[in-house]
Length: 172
Image (cartoon, rainbow, N blue to C red; front, side, top):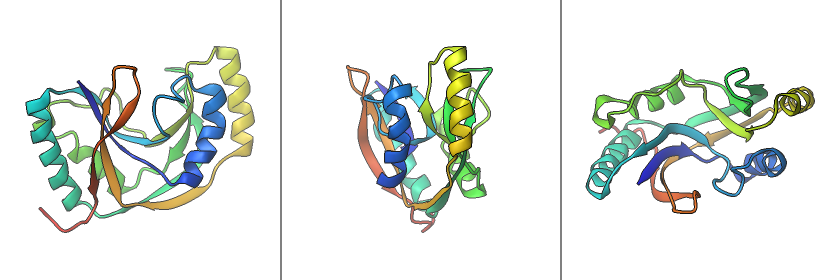
């Protein structure tokens, strides 16, 4: 089964992201707006228990962090994906790093860019047009994130929460 780890922003930021995702993101109905902390990975029932226990330890080690979405950006020319850029704070980067330690067995494919996707899989011309518009509108939203979520993918392609972990900073 496929799993991943994400942080969900507040309803306010989700509503803003969804106002674009409805029109420009074919994954709109599959997952709530989120900031990925660990990309999709495969695990069986036995492995996921160990992974969940490990994520619980990591969550205890990390304190709640500030998520600051500062602007609309793009992964072009790699992909025609638009996103709210989240400032890569030391807290977010440390959490991401801990979720990619050897015990998880998967290293990230790309350099980590904290973000919330708002549009993807567009044609080049549509990407150029929409990106130009959204850059002018912009975003400036700040909030505290105090929990992360282990998600799993259902047969229909949608994602749902498997387990939730509070960031306590209480140590291991």
